[in-house]
Image (cartoon, rainbow, N blue to C red; front, side, top):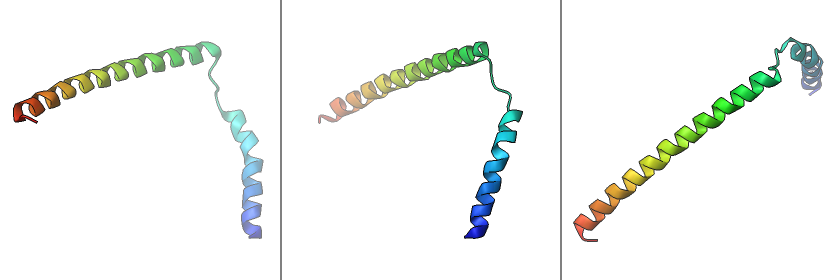
Length: 68
């Protein structure tokens, strides 16, 4: 148990130096990346919505053909 506590303390001591090595994005990069993600999500949502409409129509045709 004491070994686990010691390992955890070592981990916590290593976190701040590692965070100093990280290259954080500036505000322009962050805004651009956010814009790209929003556009991508909207495109994927549109594709899924169209697929839903197509599959719904296919299922309706199948059900009406089978007389259910």
